[in-house]
Length: 233
Image (cartoon, rainbow, N blue to C red; front, side, top):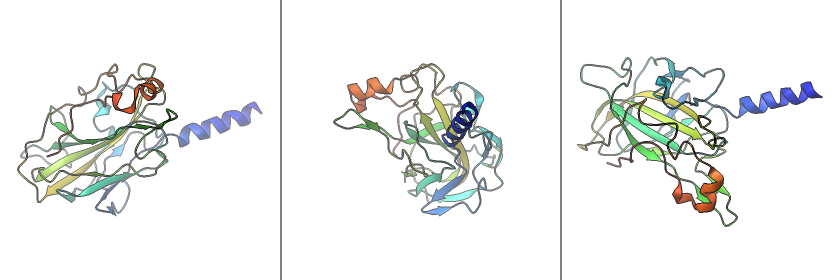
């Protein structure tokens, strides 16, 4: 009985973790996993990152992707998950423009170059039960590449922050991936504020070290997403 229980717990634990191997642009998905999305180090374990100050927090990639995909400014995007995104927490998207003379296929995304284009917030019902957009789905929530985003090559970063154990230090779990894209038909906006990875987050940020029970009692809008403000273009 003990052996069976341990096996069941292992299965549940594995199923609770996920990766985002496939980008979807205007309802058209990558032809194969990890084609324009960089394969992450947790491709087999599906384990998230718990320390938001390590270098893996940027893209967590074990290797760069072979291709770049075109994404029109104003396009709707999301990612396919390998498992249900069943943990509570926000989904956030970032972009970083590739410097002149470099390519999205090889650039590492270092420096104060990342800007946030969307985040999600929880809702709390009359019974103080909290829910998040996209929770229990196999797809990340949709977002839009701002129409004012300047044309050019970018790294697109998606993250889901699982907060089910986040009342303990370094127990929030970061599930993330970066895709190599080329924004076309862009605008003349000036994205910002900028952030770096690592650097954007601390383990003690109120959106990372957080008791969701207290947030539910105080009201959903008391949750503070980590990182810079959203640039909407």
